[in-house]
Image 1: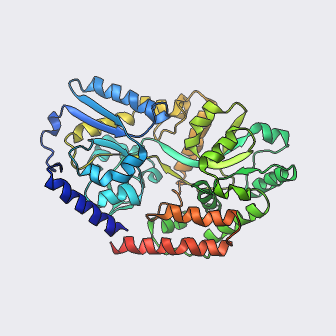
Image 2: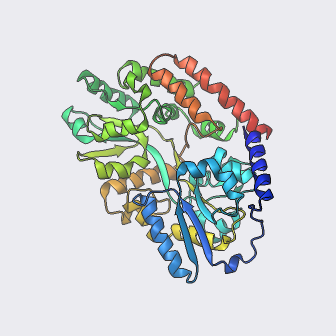
Image 3: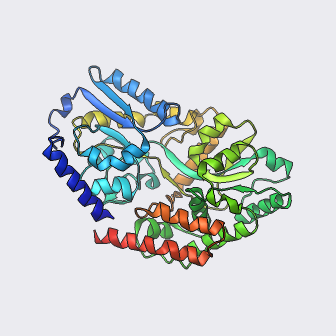
Length: 431
């Protein structure tokens, strides 16, 4: 997969060169650049969109005479064409890009991203970000976790449990503190004819629930093995076996509806918004939307009993190697790490990576951030189950759809997800 992409990008570069569209690597004149081209794909009313609009205003105030050419792009547009974009004179000087081995890691290994290590040290980004958050910023031959800095995150994200406080009160259920208490709470709902856990089998939520269950029996060594290839991973042993078997048990007990195998994440989210679903296990990226659209009383709690949780930094600010305004790009990144911008992220439903929860006005927002800070400070961010190898997302979706509709046993699902993982890791190590 990686070799194929490298060849494809090489062919693209050659084609662009033939038409004079490839930007040269010389960044002479950077200190006198009068234009900063900036791309990101956050909506204008999102926490990051609001905060970054303010960062642009500050940048303009502090850089008189510099024009900021901002373009909001679609996520898919950047995701699918990043290699070609970064080799073209039409590309940006700084852009938001997805973190992980198959994205930022791949581009860094191809020399398409500027090395930010010196700037990270000089500007204090290396001390502002916890070790867990730095993992997605640093890459060694395309593998995250060590090596040089090729991106900087300024917000975080993690998987938590959203719950309907009114349904909990109606059925006499309290917030669980352990996995056993969570199972007992779900038994109470099932006995009343209520499916306790909203789910989406057609997209990421099912794989993330499986991962949360596996992480309840995992340690940091497992995460390093699974995500960073420190040692081989045995899919027939705990914690992965426990995750798959417990997931299947939850389906059998009626905690998860079998017909949710075909549902999208949007279906799961709107089901919770409607007030009919007691709980969903999903990401902090839903938080802002729930705040604006839910009329009943709701809140969040960390997946009970876990010290490790699916989560990571948010996406990265990356600087293309071909950028003609690198110094300006570094200045902009630095502005997004300032307390004013971090507080704006937090007060609009996002999770700042260097913010003070005391400055956050809304109690729900503050709790979301405090929970994230607790996980991050304890080195508890375990990334996401589909990250290790390219194409693994679709593998997990297919596997856990089979577990939800009971067309596959836990053993069959583990077999189905083991081989693509092992083949992908072997390919990456060969490269």
